[in-house]
Amino acid sequence: MGSEHRRQLVASLVVLLAMTSCATTPGGKAKDAGDPYAAYVWPPPPDEAKIRLVQIITGRADVEGGDSALQKTLIGASPATPFDKLVKPHGVAYDRQGRLLVTDSGSRALLRFDREGGRFDVLGTTGSDPLQVPLGLGVGPDGAFFVADAGLRKVAAFDADGERVGTIGSPGDFVNPTDVAVSPDGSRLFVADSKDHTIKIVDRKTGAIAEKFGGRGTGPGEFAWPTSLAFDPTGNLWIVDQLNCRLQVFD
Image (cartoon, rainbow, N blue to C red):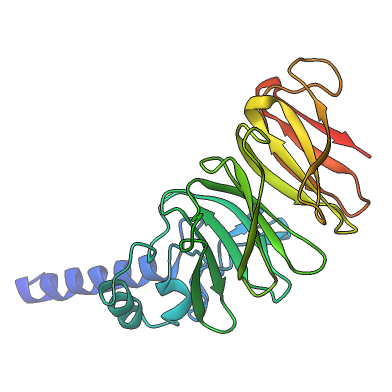
């Protein structure tokens, strides 16, 4: 074989390898050209897929930049703000308008991603009592949402539009609030106070702690650093009892 033929063969193999590598994902399945995550599914083939990766959000550009890599790069470069990239995201929820709410303790902010509208908002960073260490958050049936802030040792309250409407908690009420859930009827807030090893129930009308339950221990109804909580569709309250390595559920 002549040198020219060898060069052509090598060039053809390089092109073929490049095309093959670009057309497949780590799982070995061909990509959909219009969806970069089309092949990222669980369980993998040949089983029927139940879960599919839809999008990865790392910051403002992933919502405001559309599908253009150039637009995303330009948004990331100018105008640059401390909130353009997620730093230490912790809690996540959807508001009633379908917008994604993310607490970021690294940037001391509550970030709102409107994927449908292509809009990004920063909440809770201004005023006399800005967020310090925002962690868990809960959304009520009326659209209002609440953020447990371990730095403030309080719960920040927002209306359905994202306006800050108040702060819940007097000195000594909370030691280290890490999460909050709104009761199904919207009348009460359940706050996980991890260092106090209790769940505190707040009356939304008065903002006062109406009662609490728990206490440090390993028995039923006792906790060792409860960190997260959520209501299921039947109204039961699920609590992550972190250092007891278990979940507890209450009616």
